Image (cartoon, rainbow, N blue to C red; front, side, top):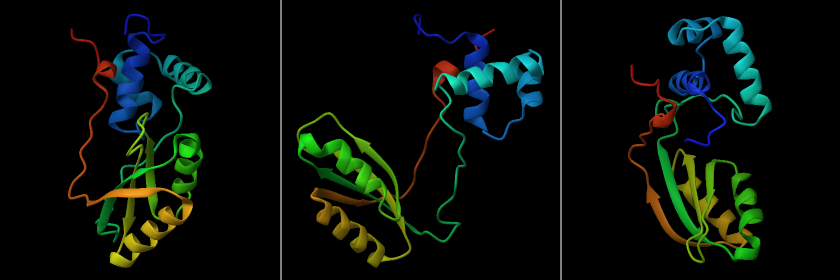
Length: 155
């Protein structure tokens, strides 16, 4: 990250927000050893420059009553791939869509539901939009981690 526009303070702020988007300015400032105004100004700059695109909540979907978390891998004609990915994201129940730079299996999506009818409804809608579904999988667990270059520097 030698050419990165981010310095250690920015990376530390991003790390704190990745760990918990509800961290307040004072807690972040205390954790990384700068003033609250510095954190506030840096966060504003990170938002204005499009580095921070938003703040999100990590939801336990099973606890929320959405027991089925499933994934589809689809193929779209390359000329329609981006538009189709956006159209798929608008389907109720779809929570994430990724567009791949490949000829085949170039759209990956995740969706939620309460029963098999939800999976079928989403699959039919994807099909009606013009994507070919290649793979349908039920997701058992989902794990993620903070991006390591945003971790605080070693001391």
